[in-house]
Length: 267
Picture 1 (cartoon, rainbow, N blue to C red):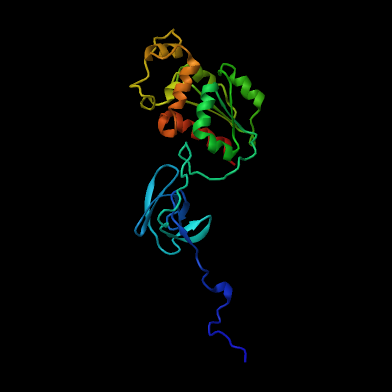
Picture 2 (cartoon, rainbow, N blue to C red; picture 1 turned 60 degrees about the vertical axis):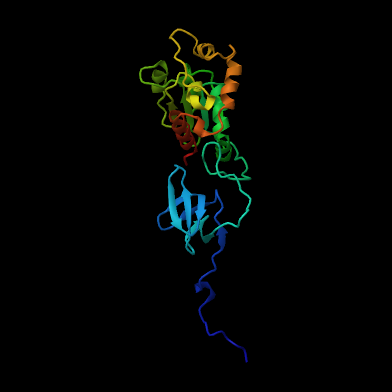
């Protein structure tokens, strides 16, 4: 006679096995009870610490079926000793995605004032921009910004973000930015005279950026005051080499660039 199992529960109603996943640094999971999503930064006996995109840490017990990985339940376990480390963060502080391919460029763009601005944004946010398919272009000044925006003709599927230097109330740049009224264009800026100042002095081994009297060329004055060679291109390469991640930049710039990326990539 054919033998039947005493368990007559249909297969689709039986609990499915849950895979065990090593809690390696950089692994992004969600704790379903709280909805907290973040990357693993530390794994200790019985607990795992997650960090979300805003830098907030939460500690959770590593219980069976306690986390979601790409929407599926998993059980986190401690990684085996000597497991190879993998990069956990990009230069901007985002969770790294090893092996990710660049996305086809969006119709939307981010404009910055000059070449130095573009190079700094690329160095810190380049990985993020390639994954999101966002192209950064530089304008060599914003005096003609309203006509540039009109020529670009931003729309729902082609948003335009613009980063402006020295965007403080009452400045020339502020008045220019106010004249851009398209709902599909966003103009933001930092308070510094030039993008150089958005780099933390401590990252360059100087105490502070020097004060340059009005009427003098700011970059030339900075080089003179710091005893650097009077060549702004060489000075910029010196500054850029001191930038390794978002930690080397002032918050006033970080927040604005993140805001532009979010605006351009919003569905």
